[in-house]
Length: 196
Image (tube, rainbow, N blue to C red; front, side, top):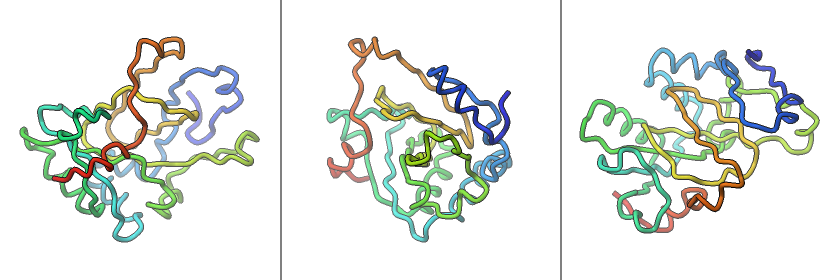
């Protein structure tokens, strides 16, 4: 087991393969809040948001079972709406115990821009020479249960799960001819102009 905040970059770069770093962020305030309840995690996140932050919230219908696919054919099923963060959390809370609920997904919010001050007690140290002139960009994803379609994540990634669980299915590059990856980002929904 690796230390909670020390990342063994040399070992990771040499191995050049996926790895799970258990307990890496267990001392974060946001993780501790999430262990108390999802509501406490949402309150902690909202307390660090930049005022009346407007975000894009994606929604699928119950029949889609949380599957968010980037396809023009399904743009009428997946709706994008710009809301304040408090409204997003309200909709997630309201859907929690509803068997007929929709599924919600808010992705790729830049941490420093959208949640200034969050890093103070929820951060990792990127002190390897590789990052001297290339600091990582930290982003936040929030939502109910969701399934993302196959897609590219071009840069190296370190995904930290604060609340709930995440499962990744990774494919080796030589399998690209057997995959149908969708476009990256939520822009494909935004350009559709759909609302609910």
